Length: 527
Image 1: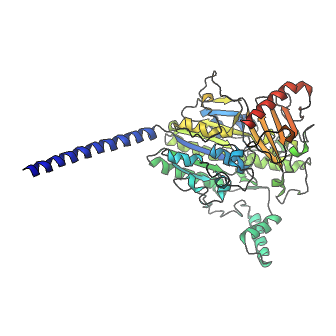
Image 2 (image 1 turned 90 degrees about the vertical axis):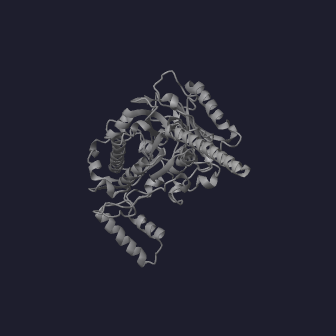
Image 3 (image 1 turned 45 degrees about the vertical axis):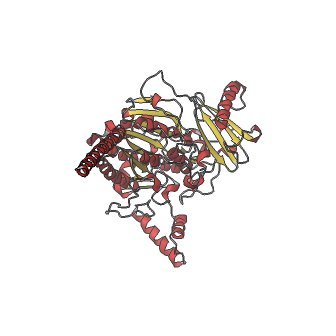
């Protein structure tokens, strides 16, 4: 009898423990569900080489209704700047929330996973916070060639689709759909093979050296080019994410308006080339160090551009008009893709639970200072479109407060209800997004840098001015500040001289301003 009582007691105790364990398990699951269901989804739209040549930024010649549409949904920052005006460093910076001197990425070849292996990417961190993360298109630069496009970042594999519109087939070298161009490329490849060239990279180089048009205007569908495919894949990924139980991060990385400027004919037809605005100031600035400029080698690599052009040389007006026309057509092409994404969010009633952020990885020179492409510390290279919409963002706002692309990292986390990472060098901009005119953020300047050989140019950009110091001997902000290293300075006044026609660094009228900005830059470099 005693033995039976012991067994009954043990069974009762077992049932008690099991029930309490189940309660604890349910409670834990409830806490987990509460924490994740309060988090917002994130649509992260990255656009290569996009400057603020958009109608919502006051560019009346542009046809970009979907950028206008997004602007009405939230905040447009009109004085936003990248930390380094070229793809690799800029994207490494925004994806880790840290400055280039911390990622140690200052070129197109370095992978932050190797140069700064302790850094954690934004989507990688979100996975640890209960998110499903995935992407399509160009999000990283170096990651484009890494396994899985930086595979650590995605809980669902990243996608680079190649299912081009079968009516046109695969474009030549992923760029060109013009039948004559494709036929000529085939001829060049055969010519190279007859000369004993058999490796893909060398075949491509042989063909590109002889035929690489900077523009293409062909009557094809959106899906004849990569960016149209990215949209279709993004919509499929969105449907997949919406069926899941987790909050999600979806990155969509568009490659236009990057060179070459190829877009379907219907987007070229939106503009009259003869009426397109050319750059108003096409010469070097008065008093600006010549090493601040470059000879736009990226553009000169195309077969229809004179490769002998140098700093200060202007392209012929007809070619300028063609290039600007192509850039504008590509922007309108991307505008149409943006519209498709917004349509789907509206259709699925997802807007109220989705934080949207859109950004360009740097600006683009279109003939100003005789410059083309990016690769500088000038306004046209550093200034970008930077837009937020969704929960926590007041509608139809603009702000001229200087902000940094690196601020995206903490801002998105706060909007989405995600615990902040201690890694970031940026600051949350949420205080500027709720339409409270009395709120500010504790920094009144943006900052950026760009190298010329052993010289690194560091800049601060306030609401009205930009000040740049060029430090020699491969100086970086991780080293002690040494004024004897400075080999040149620049000061521009965007109220009285918005085109940067004159460097005011030696003008006595600007001594007070220069000293104030110099102190800001020194503080930034030494903090």
